[in-house]
Image (cartoon, one colour):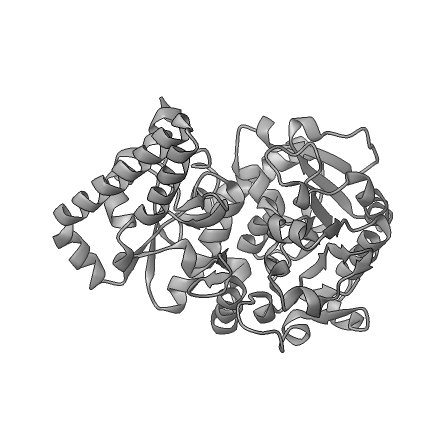
Length: 425
């Protein structure tokens, strides 16, 4: 029943627009484009899907007329809804972080609705409900859908994302600029999303029961997207074996390492103070968030847990980063290591990448330009981890702050606003 309700009422604000399969906003124009495409290609299943999407949007338009008085009252207030995608933990964390901070910068009060019928309904609610108006009730979530999809009283993904479609930048703001502006004004990114005292005490006991007497303040979290990671793009994967030297180094420095995995990702690697944690096997979904929040930092690829780390305000060492212009590491404690791009066996430099569409990581552009994507090797990963656990400001011969490195890059670039450091490989 939960899956059926989720299918009908959990409306994702994103849509892939065909035939290019470019990411765009969910609206009637894009839905009609897809209906036309799948009608021509005689794909009945997809056609039914998008016809349903169209009727759902038309129903919301009718409901908005009925809700008009309530919409007007909310419009003249300081409250604003968040148009969230709650089907993936990474996108959800990314939007919560950027949308809430964007509204707070405008002196607005966010109304956060994470439906109880969505897959991730229990993930962030305990972080949010202490400071924000957070709704988790199914009936109330459905009732609020017309309000969420009224642009005048809600914030949409294009306000915090960079969409790239048909050689045009589609956005209202930049993710890294929002985060940097927020930190400059409020200086409390690491304190904005927190568990209350009783919840922290419970999660601390749960942690000790699973990891004995581990000290999370001397523990780094590791998350890699290897080929066993489900539903991942091949461009965003990496080899776990390339992280083994870095793990050994951290253990030799008397740190603990917790690698967050899925069941089919578990390895045979075993060392004292090294743990593998399958969060799917844990009944309390807050534990994964608590481990990251209380840790010394997270070492990760670009993916779901890098956006969670950004939301929680913990230090991030983000490796194998692609797309080039999308990094969750934004603070002065964060370090970024991009993948490499090669054409005709010659590595492209940052100027060539960031002054072209290659920074948006569209596979079609890679194929058209004969681009080869190269993973970080074990020596590069070990080097950035060594730098990451020290003061980044003392290592500026090997790394440079993003806002300085990319200050002369043209329009349409988010990373030029980041305070994080870039490793020049």
